[in-house]
Length: 423
Image (cartoon, rainbow, N blue to C red; front, side, top):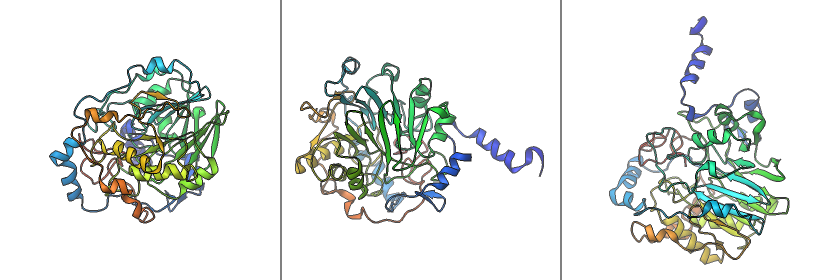
């Protein structure tokens, strides 16, 4: 075989046809570093605790539940989601306490820490999908345009799923001089989208970097990765710790199932002024890789040394329809589980800044005004849902969980209007 017919030439041609939103596979020195990682074995990144990343149970039964008419109605707000009306003006004033969080929806949070600005998992796109014409749409607008946000010192990415790593958003941020802190391997995507190597801080679990006086540490999470038709598990997923020069500490969970490692993270880096914890897009069909509200509260307590200190900000809910549970259920679950343990939980409108170390933390259940119908919190959510199986499960390949980028669940990663994307 010679010339253009060589296998190398064919692979190059196939890569050139790959949609930009799929990103890029790690190669060269980046791939060599991945192979040297203590968290990489048998050709893939490994979870800290075995996790099923393919849905359990029958795909047919899941589809019946997911696409049932009444269930679909309950997964969507009945009226426009209220947004905080003065986000831009509020952000123009420095936080008196030195620490302020602004939830922009889903897992996107702007954190202002001792005069520095950190933007977690920014997703400003209309859909979390590789396609502009299909895939789950936003259930509410972004509170303000990305260009209006102002300078950001560092963008932190938890993993490469579409609802956390958004091509249009990254391309807009690539035109600035912000630094990107990402898990090992994710830098390959960003470089393809125009971020220079010099602006990347690519970390393995427990590694740290300093940006603008902030110390950022990648910490373990229980999830998986993947954007394209083949999920090779060559990009890491992570939670993140950020510490400011004055000692303010915050934690962002990214996506994760519950696992005992939260206690270790808390012992090494906590306690935290605030934790940003994933509480949405859970299901009994994938109990190991997303947390219920009760599991999220348990994680918060673990991170705080078993004490209900600091403030928990629920994330990964209300913005996209990614799982079978009702739209209001994560918020209601956050309220009930916080009350049970005496913890403080922040419930801001999208775009509502608050200072977690003060007494003035938003706590009103704003979603009830636009809820499709009264929806009691299920017994499984109150009891912790999948906690009984949190320690079980075999490590399997990714690809069939809704949003894994390929999956067998109807619409997963394919852009079906009601299908769950990378979650």
